[in-house]
Length: 125
Length: 125
DNA sequence: ACACTTAGTTACTTTTTGGTTACCCATACT
DNA sequence: AGTATGGGTAACCAAAAAGTAACTAAGTGT
Image 1 (cartoon, rainbow over the protein chains, first blue to last red):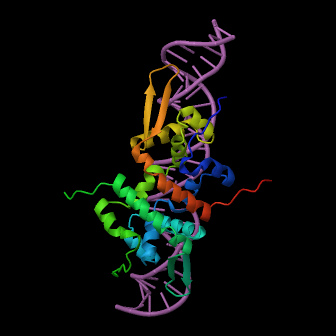
Image 2: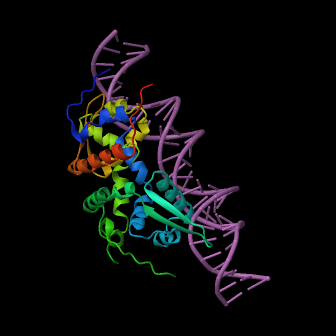
């Protein structure tokens, strides 16, 4: 069995971190906010589109089930707060936690990278 | 139908970008390098663990099929180069493209955020 | 003659995702 | 009396993702 030698220390020496934390820190991070609709949901909540129905109208391609699902995961991972008002019809207000807010610079960079490297402006037909 | 008013301009006004590019720039970016094994693969290639078999030994939980699959997608999205030597047994060397290299600062931040917000050090039993 | 090497591919099966539809609550409005 | 309201659940089903095992090529070493 050949010995693999790692000669460079790029990407912060991830190998040690994997050992220490039992997983890839980048993938772990992405699991938290990288779901199919999560970036968009976080964005809309951050600009005060903060109710279930409003979110649905902004993202018509996201089914109710998925919306609930993604919101619940974001809540469990403490990126958003869910405040329920005991009214009829029900009223729920979502907001970003501090942890959620702390993602902003990262989102900004991801967005920039995407525009420079992935996306192409749509032509109008 | 209620009119939704967006009052803040956080996250770079993503709404306009969605219109212009036909998708969420953050999600689009994550699609390119956010696969199950891609961050780790990119990391290892960046530190010159650059052959198929070496990568497999570093990531024993990633099956051959998945490894091939993820490498092919990374190649298609131009994050890595695949150089084939016409030898027997076959020899293939992977390396990062400039586009792949340009992800480094982003990976660094994702990693940092993950360590601060998601991961917990493993206890030794 | 046989096994070993690397970098995969193929076929088959299981697991995970995600879509769809119908349904729920209690009150206000028509 | 019937309908709309907001924020969901539950059951069912199709599609996509991912695991597993077997197989390949052509040359070298035993």
